[in-house]
Image 1 (cartoon, rainbow, N blue to C red):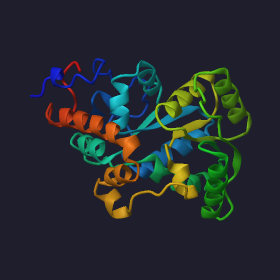
Image 2 (image 1 turned 30 degrees about the horizontal axis):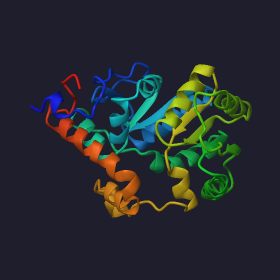
Image 3 (image 1 turned 90 degrees about the vertical axis):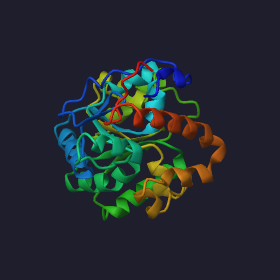
Length: 276
């Protein structure tokens, strides 16, 4: 068994399970719960909550999140506020399936288009927050076109450079989103900013479902190119991303590889049983 002392880069103790999850827990990866099995389950959970006017947060758990969760207390606190958590990333989905065979990989990037279609069908306005103004415009047009003009976009906003999700500016943005009439907000700030903002919005009482989607709007707008489907389907999307942005991602993926090794060689389910 791999001991925690072999991984000195992980500074904090192993996190505690997510506390806020409402739906039955399906799996736990490194102590963090997953309670949404499939894409269709995610869409139903989100649209049901949005239709009732409930505010909640939706996160997609991946290896990069797990690395950050071991080091960042604020990120851990935000994760504990999530109502729905999916398995994002092939390694997380594989570990989760060892505990619950029905779990599928559900990424933020894959979720946006079908969720927008469901929102359009149910008359649920959406809000786009993050990325850049040009990206938001193109992504918004793509979403409207994909729903044959039925999707209502209540607003879109690209925050200023250096946006702090725990600032007065963040509170003002949350209030604008809540006042817009949107029932679903796509947050495209990257982790951990988007999760911190979602948790803050829920605590502030915004009656909106905040769905954290990473670079999904950039993919929709064409400002970033996602890996070919073959790589996505075979859990190799990381190779494409590393090849296209090695300087930014090399260290991140090295840390993810270390954590994956740790998870693989602890319990059969991939749940850490060391103190980290």
